[in-house]
Structure formats: C-alpha cells, structure tokens
Image (tube, rainbow, N blue to C red; front, side, top):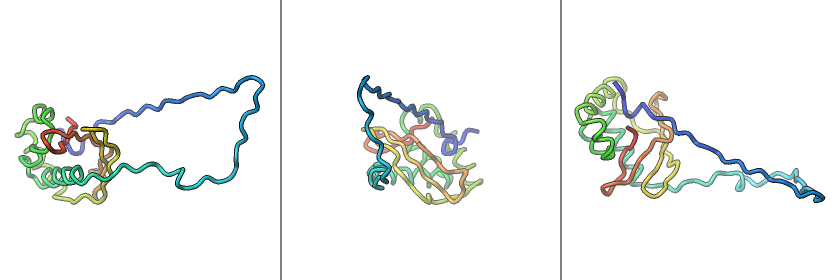
Length: 147
C-alpha cells in the first residue's frame, strides 16, 4: 500500500550553466586568493511561513496519529480525487500502528513560489524524513500535493 507521507516523488532540478568567453587580446581578470565573506557564501533563506508550517504539522499529526479524515482534509483537491478518503484512512491507520504519532523535529521551507511551496522536515525516525515535499495554496489554506 502506498503511504503518501513516506512516498515522495523525486524532484529533478536542472542547473543552467553559462559559459564566459574572453575576447582575443584581452587579459583575463585576476583571481583573488583572499577569503570571501561568509555572508556572500551563505544561501538566501526562504522566509518562514507559519500557515504552511501549521498545515504540514497538522497533516503529519493526523497521518501518523491514524486520523485519515483529518489528513484527507489537508490534501489538495487533485490528490483527494486521486487517493480517496477510505484509502488514506487505511494508510493513516497503518502509519499509526507502525510509527505512532511522532512530532516533527525540524522544519524548513525550501521554496515558495506564489501558490506552490516545497518543504523539508525530519522526525526522530529517519525513514519518515521528508525533502522537497510539494504543497499548494488552495481553498484558503496550504494542502499536501504529492499524489
């Protein structure tokens, strides 16, 4: 049986590489061996989103706590059509029996782009850890969108 919380589709991320060419007869710029500041090397943090975090925590609590109806309410409409409430209820009951209602240990918003977001979070049991989990803003709230 597919467990929605555990089965995460891998997101392929492509990187575009741009080449730089030198004009004939020009001297290439000097390369500095001086250390760069840590601020320049640090990635830009995505701002916290309390509503998104609350939705993720509620979904996780319902799913791992065996509350399929509560977890189903936090699915996107697309996923509700694809999965069905009875299937999610069975999966939530199985997750509760296997893991119990574990709290989320750490939470990070990976990206937010309008009505779409990805999040990563961890548990005390590493097999439950989530990375780049998709969520969508619809019907006035954040909904789990990986089906």
